[in-house]
Image (tube, rainbow, N blue to C red; front, top):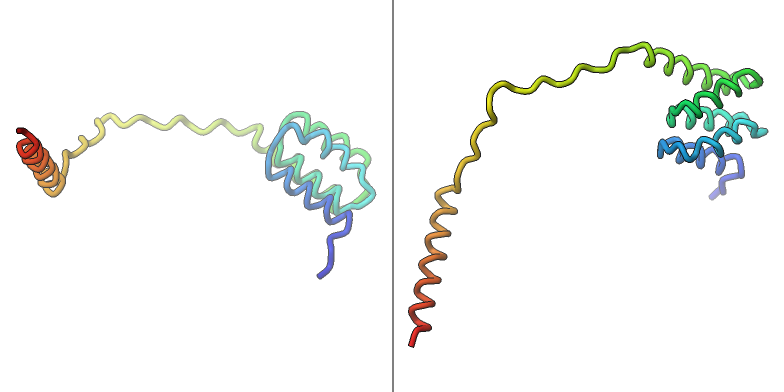
Length: 132
């Protein structure tokens, strides 16, 4: 079995951080945009896009100006274009409340009523037996 090399481990770490969506991870991901491996930089860009905070997007815009790797630039530009597209969209409408009341909750089933009556009868019999 082959072991992951350092670049593979960094890539995997970026994927995990992107999946968590935590703003706490923006700084380490932004610094990873300066890694020597395009694979690592591309996944760091993806992860920053998943975080989506203003700081994460700012880091991507700064990296876009100096990035030379085609695949990394594609990821950065794709993420930034999605952000621009969603920024211009109106928020989804609030769901309408139903004017009709919710259906009433039915009472216990006939079987449950029978079990309850049987339990009450057993309790009564046990009490009668226990009396001196």
